[in-house]
Length: 313
Image (cartoon, rainbow, N blue to C red; front, top):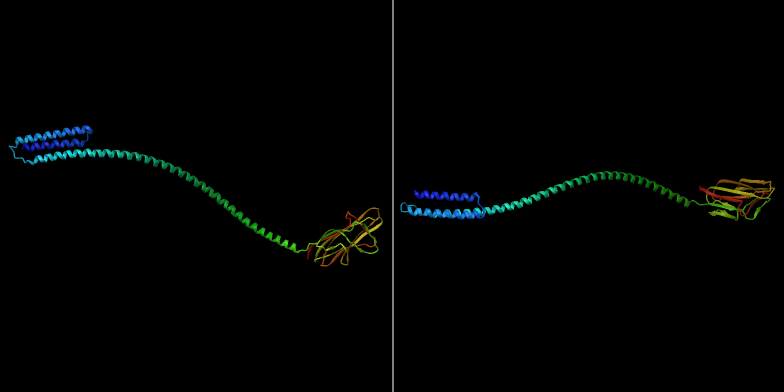
C-alpha cells in the first residue's frame, strides 16, 4: 500500500514537470538550467523511492518491473522536453518566415495599389483617346462626304470636259477639212492708172495675203476654190483733177456694184464698198475700171482689193 502511494506521488511530480515544459514560460539558458534541476530532482525522487522500496521490500511483495516502468516514464519525459524544444525552434522559424511573407505581401499590396492607380490613369487616357477618336471619326466622315461630293462633281466636270474636248476635236477636224481662203492686194506703185475708153480688169499686183492661192495677181481675178459664202471689199483712190474715178465689181459676168466719184477740185477722192456673195466652185470675182475714169495708187496702198471665205456650203 505504501509503494502505491509513492508511485502516485512520483507520477504527480512528472506531470507537474511536463506542465512546466509545455507552459513555455522559461526559454533559452534558463530552460536548460531548469531542465537539469528537474532531472536531478526526478533522479533524487527515484532514489528516494528506491530507498523506500528497499526498506519496505522485506514487508511487501511489489513487482520489480515498476522500476523499469519508472525509468521508461523518465525517458519519455526527457524525449517530450526535447521535442518541445524542437517544436519551439520550428515555430520561431515559421514565425520568421511568416514575417518575411508578410513583408513581401505588404510590398505586393503596394505594387497592386500602384498598378491600380496606373490602370486608372491609363483608363482615363484611354477614355480621352476614345473621345478624341470619336471626334476625329466624325470629322473624317464629314471629310469623306465632302470628298464624295467633290468626286461626283469631278465626274460631271470630266464628262463635260470630255464632251468639250470632243467638240473641240470635231471643230479641229472641220477646220482642218474646211478650205482656208483669204487674200488682199494693192493695185500698183506706179501712180495713175487710166483713164481708158473701155472697161479693163484691174490687176492688183501687190499681194499682201493669198491663203489658198485663189487670187491670181497676173489676171486680177479671184476664183472660188469651193462652194461657199465669201466676203469681198475694195477701196478706190483718185488723184486727177476734173476727172472721174470708178470701178465695177463683177461676179462672173454680172456687175454687182459700181463705185465712182468725180474730182471737181484739185484734190484726192476715194470710194469703197463691200459685198457678201455666195459662190459656186469655179466662180470668179474681179474689179473692172469704169470707162473714161482712172484710179491712183502708190507705195501707201491707196487702192486695194480683199476677200475671204466665210464658210463652205
